Length: 339
Image 1: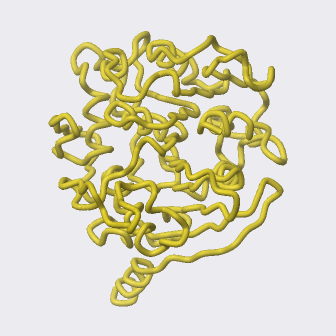
Image 2: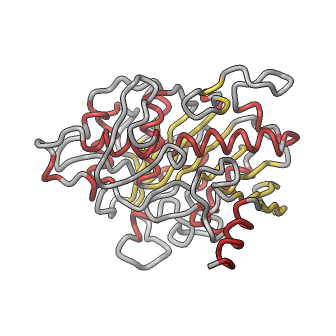
């Protein structure tokens, strides 16, 4: 037991950086234990479950790309998209968050009429923390999950950005927070006791559950772009969750993108949500090539590179399932993040 405690203390304060060069460009990857930016956040013993951040060496776009993995995932499952975006000049934060429960299992079709706020409570607790007020003063709790404020998505993102601004100042992370030219914070988020983000510079997306996280954040903040890859999952049998259907998003639907595989078992729900959101264009196969007739609702039917029941679901962005070397969906990834 004493040895394990010492090991956990070691990983809690460790970060590692390595330099990589790809055909798309040069970048550095740094892995950071989630409890390093904020000691109240749960530590992860294995480095494959740490946050992964990517710094473009040159030229930088001065735009931030945040990626959220899917259920039971981890940042190391989605390195291809992060590496590609970094090679294209984005600063990239691939964030580890609590994702042990799927939205669909937390809110099955059977509760559509009896618990219409189910998806809202699920997202609210995951993103802001159990019974923590969101930016409009609402607080939520869902019986299927238990996410404390320190382990919430918002706390992890804000504190990771602060950690990077402080410890890797030369890499330019401070520009993505509300800081002046000297690096001093000009707007503190009192709920999480750290500097606020400059959301207008952030393109936020994710895979599966992670895409729902990105969309939920766009409800409250004006994001540069929203990328939903194999998601969102917040739909009933024939209708979208009320937090989606009611509209009122701070981010315009004109900068939202969806991308899904037609053989995905959740495809009908994903495409339904895109339509309800008012994302531009009709369903368009990515194979027709950019700019896809102006559509932001993209599909694929290309065979996944892996073999498992969820292969189609993962093929849009998960490393082992995405086809092609280099991945054939790179143009889609770039477009969904605003390239």
